[in-house]
Length: 78
Image (cartoon, rainbow, N blue to C red; front, side):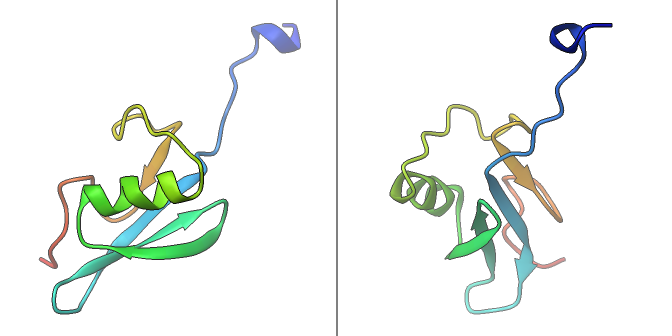
């Protein structure tokens, strides 16, 4: 198998960590491995990406965003 035919494993630049307690609960957003903000909604994640010059086309694409401890609709502790 040639290199061009092999599957690529990419690491997304954006990682949204699990929900943390707070008022309101929040999730930390990492870009390129560095914590850049606390988010309380998907909109906050998009704002953090935009501030870093990253355009997110699909929040469900694991090549763009890695969600840890729940997906894009998880914003409260259970």
